[in-house]
Image (tube, rainbow, N blue to C red; front, top):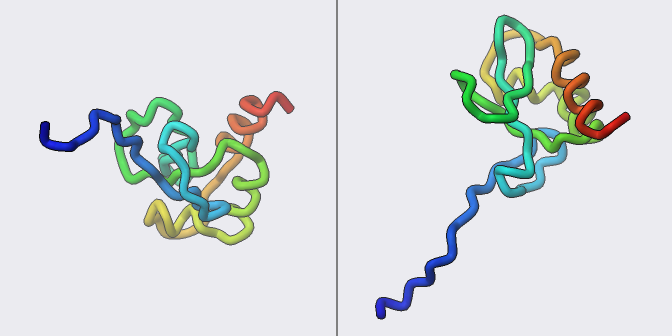
Length: 93
């Protein structure tokens, strides 16, 4: 045998809110669409994506630190109401 294990490697991403690394499936991908930051839970929307934990705390940190426009490389502020609504529904608030 070659000594390699057959364990699958799980891709990791960094949350833009808390800056912690986590498995890609634990994070929510967000995409900028026409000046609005929208959730992309299936990961199929075109364009550059930024990852955030689906928790209001991480989303608030990302908005407060203004990292979403930088991570998505768009000029100016982004509207995060759709993203906030999705996160609140996912948490069951």
